Image (tube, rainbow, N blue to C red; front, top):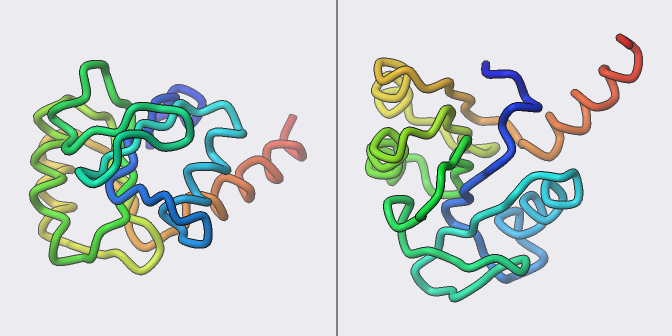
Length: 133
């Protein structure tokens, strides 16, 4: 996967304003760790102090990683949009898995993670990093 520290701008598809849901607290945690979070949800105007967009293709700046909080069958159109905006990677949150979409993303040169919690993996990465320096 691309160097984690090089992935600074994360578009969150399925971002929610409900603090008890992973679509909120995972990106909120990532924001506290220095990542720029761009909410993608057609029903919101903003999230975490950032303007929200209805789709990935409406975001007017480069996106490094697309974090997906959508049901597995709904993933392919978002992968297509991620390819269109030249994202570097796709991350399907814990419980989300779409092999066909992953193959499409990989064929387009994107890195792919499926069925993994970005919050948990980031904490593990940070913990392991302390011991490798």
